[in-house]
Length: 147
Length: 400
Image (cartoon, rainbow over all chains, first blue to last red):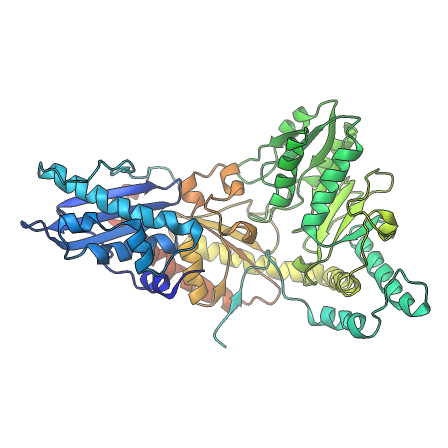
């Protein structure tokens, strides 16, 4: 079902984790559709992405696209990162099954959401970046619910 | 070959070697068409009739009430579509449950497009059909009630006798999809008050591609496959003789081993359930603790997603499923889990493990140990899971 590259990134995901005090963080997707991605960016004073981490709730493709997206933006400038499209993520993974292509879209949106957060925090405008629609913010599931 | 633990027996089962042995002569020796006149074909015909008797015996039916089909989905399609057609002068209303197999649900949706009305009855949190709702849904134009004997995902065994009694009291035809229950629990068409029952060969160590529909004598449903005069002209097509023989043999073996086999499976299943609930935090059992299929265990693990879990289990050699194999590849969470009231995010983290008499305690221990690692690993990657915060919130520490 999945390419070798997808399986590699699923089994050995790059850049899993969190960044403390990130320059920008974005969360996209929702649990209802089965995928949530959170992307953390550490951006230096020259606008270069020094470090990137992610956390993902989702299927094999969701994990692999998150991982690949982090690889594609690491070391890039903000403007370069903005050019990382879902298609680029897909191609870098040697393709995804049709029902899983939306995962790569989510990866692109996660980067955009993190960049948007960075732009807001720094009161800057990143040319070509639109406000992410899929940001579900920091909403957490209700942990008081028990079973 | 690397390790393989097969825990997806609700999807399909290994064909029993004795079943294969029983089938073999009907490929190369007694290969005659049972409908032919010459005596050579008589062997095949006798074998088909013997299988019919064995299968009828397993559910307390008469042999002439058993009609062979190509499988459970065909039987369900036939029962629903043909009953709808046969009784449309009486009415066009059908009642079913929200947790049926897609062979029933999608057939109902098809019938809705043909002008029939379908009421989908709710289930409670354990997956039991709400009987009061079911009875209230019956109208003068209701022609059919179809409720499965046991659920293919969460294993809940329905109060079929009660449903049958309600149907009968109101003069409504009752069909049950017993594909998962057949050979797993005792079935008796009279006790269950059913008019039609679907079953499939490959769920009880028989071959794939063969099933049956029990139709109670007197129920006027017509042919589904038109053609020759096979199956009393109700289901045309040359008999799948090896398949039917294998189905019969599987039923014979299933009947002989029923008590011992299911007792063994239940003990192992309960051990599996106990270990998982005790050792994996934020896990829950779906379905009823007691009234569930002997070999079925179905869980949800919070904060993680099912497919990732299945891929990692596969890499450890464990074959499992997240719900029903038929819906893998679809993005929506299981309709069964939503029907029992689980929110989407929890329904996405589901796992079905279905055992066989060949499953060992070692298999279960290996699987639970693997699962503990996998769940932990995926949770550490999940933005929904914050161990420290949860420990604080729950006021206690998570088991290691």
